[in-house]
Amino acid sequence: MRISYNRKDDIATIELGRQKIDHAQEAENVIIHLSKDDDPVMLEILDASKFLTNLMKASMTSKTEKPVSV
Image (cartoon, rainbow, N blue to C red):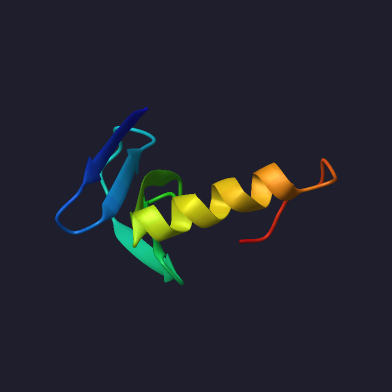
């Protein structure tokens, strides 16, 4: 796994595998790049600073161990 951040465009990239990217799907501010077999290969988080700030706030203020929606 490799994580990188582009400060100019505020995009965090998480490389999950080395397969060839075949297609992508976007859900709000996250683009999921998938292989031909629909295995996730890479995640791109748009507006990453805002996303990660909200994620940290939500996880730190949660009173439960259940997943937190951001």
